[in-house]
Length: 192
Image (tube, rainbow, N blue to C red; front, side):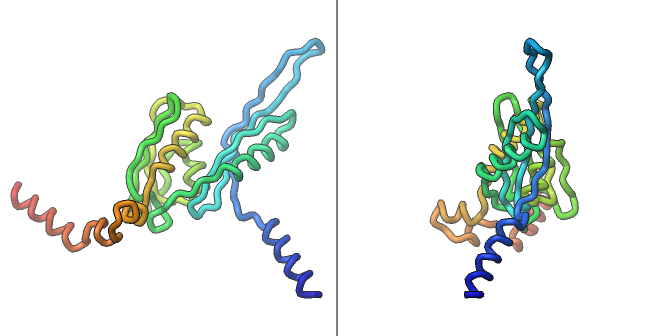
């Protein structure tokens, strides 16, 4: 009997434990003019992630800021995507993402580079758990479009395991051999 109570307690503890981190990216105050004056509302944009390869974003509107943030956080948790990371710190390959007039370019980076990216993109990378990346936003500076373009690019990313599975090969056949890479570069240097 005590064992069942304990299990239920553990489940509740797991649900209450904050497995997701969230970041408020933008908050917008809008007003509606009515007969008696102005009514204010708030729109919040939130990015949520587990910092281990899952990220999502949501937007919420309400009369009060905390309620708008809560709605946005709930929506973000429902719309999460999984992104494969190389060594748990960077992207597998360079990519470009688009949404409307927003366009972003994301590039892999060596260890120790850090996150070099603008505001909304930085929030996505931090919540995703990426430590080294170089990114540039070209086009729309609207935070909604920047985040959507970033997630569009991240959805295009594929790991060597996924590519190997798609081609029906082994991962070792797809990745370049480390011994061959320096030999090829030395041959190119000799020819030049």
